[in-house]
Amino acid sequence: MPSATRWLQLHPDCGLKRLENLSVYNRATDELYEVNEETFAFLQRCLTGVAEDNLRPAEMEFAGEALDEGILQWREFPRPRSGSAGAAPQPSLRYLELQLTDACNLRCRHCYVGDCRGRELPLEKAEQLLAELAQMQGLAVLLSGGEPLLYRDFWRLNDRLSTYDLRVVLLTNGTLIDLEAASRLQVDAVQVSLDGLEGAHDFLRGPGTFQRACSAIEALQEAGKVVSVATMVYRHNLEDFAALEGMLAARGIEEWNIDVPSPSGRLATGSDLLPDLATAAAVINRFSRGGGHYTAAGASWSCGAHLATVTAEGRLAKCGFYSAHGLPLARGLREAWLELPRIPLEQLRCACPFRDECRGGCRYRAEAFFDPLGPDPVQCYRYGLDPPGRRWVTCS
Image 1: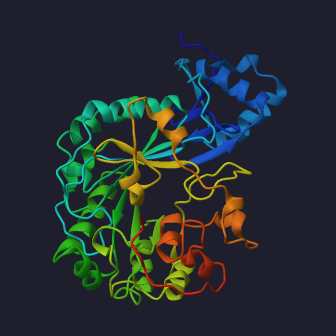
Image 2 (image 1 turned 45 degrees about the vertical axis):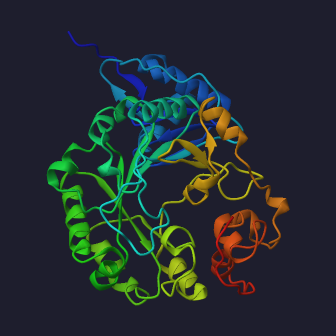
């Protein structure tokens, strides 16, 4: 006879995280909830299952809210789970980009990686890093390249992704994804690059790439994958955004990440592709939605406080733009993360009423226009400020 007692358990999509503050993270929805010690202890009990008959009134009230948020679920029989006992380093590493390969099937005019050197992250190293990130209470891993689907061990890695308590996001140009590939993907979300309508996109990425990217989006959605889009603002796509917004809305795509190219890779010496920054900032403010990374309340560091990149050659950098300054991982991800150079907010020479909100913007872009401690002009324009202009320079 089946038991009449229901068991309350943490939803399979959720994990408990010991970050700067105790939290529960839903990797399917990318929602992070900070909780107090009492609630965290209760959720720990829910890892193994709490019988409905044993719930106190206050716990039942909280359970109702958590069930609505998808944090908890009722089960007929409990399925005990283990939780990670370790605490995150300070600051916590929440998002890790893995550049699996620098190989790519396109030669985009604005690519910040530049030309392929044939480098690949060994599969065993990629798996080690995923395990370390989960142990460090990380939230998400971003699989990138180059084009990550060209990684020789991509599908072997893909088949093992579900073993890690991490949100997995694939960053791709979409040209190698059909329905079969989309159906095989074991990721939580896929971000496809779409740099304008067909003419503008193909100008940057090559003839036919717009249609192939759109076909990839259709295949991914047919396979039930969550799709977001990334777009770079450049001189020739400024008039495309209203139409592109309508196209994405018609496809039900909610997250749209928009940014401005930086002087790296094929744009290292500057280019007439770069837009007027005030105009680009207005485009970002009007059209970009979603995709923000969670930052600890009161964090004292500028951009990159919770994000890092592992390059295809196996070094840890503040982000892909700083790959030339990556640190070796010989002593592990935690040690390399703690050794990464960081810039405190109070050292920035861009004191303004919005500094704590924008966190100084992109440090690489700031260095390209001014210096490592100067303002990021794109962010200044986004907040209605008017920074002094300066030509792009190559960062050291």
